[in-house]
Length: 193
Image 1 (spheres, rainbow, N blue to C red):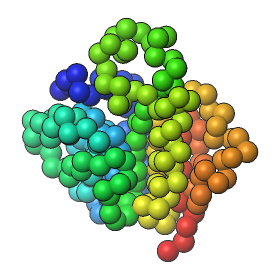
Image 2 (image 1 turned 135 degrees about the vertical axis):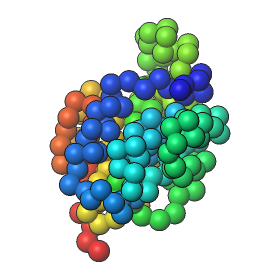
Image 3 (image 1 turned 45 degrees about the horizontal axis):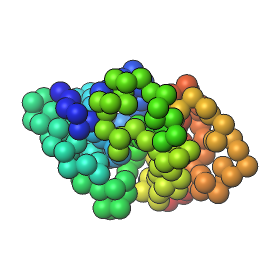
């Protein structure tokens, strides 16, 4: 279920879930962090398919977390919810991080379809003036909370360019780009234990 407090899940969400489920991870004992969970669609889909995974869902919006909690209860799934501005309240390390963060440049607001512009929460849509504000925070921090050899799958826009630009090495830290699909970029932490 969705409310005006969360994005309506789209095909990008399903692509990210399918990617995560296809990883060479065991069916038990895996810790997952879903950043910007919104309705909980990604976290709950992963928990449904891998009931023995420990799934944590994070959002900066209390209203979005309430929607995720209601969806978890309705589905009879147990996930841990965290009110946090991305990683600010997150401790521990994870085998898998997934996220469909805001990536629309605020300057593009007028060009969006009115169904999106007028009915989706701004917090979940806009990634700063250039659309990259969240990635500048998310990617370096992901390296810090990923276990050595851990995986991160992050929805990116179709531009693709910034991942291959000269600033990429500093931006990425220990993360190594593994694949560049149309809607999801996958990284693996090269850090050794």
